[in-house]
Image 1: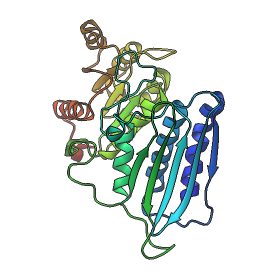
Image 2: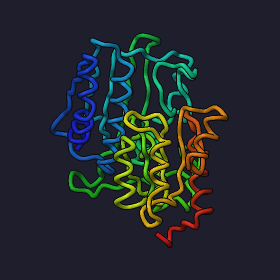
Image 3: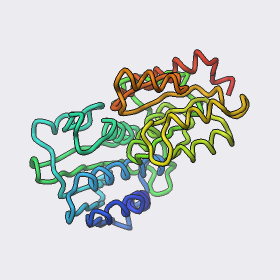
Length: 308
């Protein structure tokens, strides 16, 4: 049900909204029946749109979500009083690796993947997404339209086949399917986007918000591969990889590891490799590059879907 996955996403965003004194308003039609698709994926769509809206809305503003039935589609509108989008950038809102402010000193960080992944997920469900804005400082609106089951309220939900050249811009390699990947990232938006990206390639993804949490996960059940940020409070990625490399062989010491970090200088790469990482990638990262580095490590480490 649309109301359920939107409300669940809103609850996870409400703390951030309250901290900024941004009013989060839901005006959802409780009589709407189910839409085609997977509730967890649709909740990710709602979460991402709400997170972006709260992030870019100034203190004292509001974010509002409405739902209604329009013909054979459920229409969800995510409206905010945030900074808005310039007419020049609006046509590129859903392009992967595009951000309205692409400078290294931009106030809001990120991977440049969020809206591309949202578009991909919506299209997987046979739906569409549209972005509207009257310009800088005038807020924005995202309209998601999802089909309802042809057989009525009790029709089985399903996903549409993904196009061979999706909005991610590439086909996921088979080596990623079933790969058990641990993502270590303290920034929630980035962590969730990485998880979403890898899950779209059918990896089994686990996540940790700190080095301490990651150590426990590796010691308990070593993943096939680890992707970790470097700069994290309470213990950085360098300390984490040193601890992992000191574990017994059957507890993770040989886990292939990628440092994914904003520390992008040549000396940062050397330090990451010396600490024990196998690869170093700087943020923001092209999704294709990240996936193929994962494939390269999987191949060099002898990881195959049949072996897992």
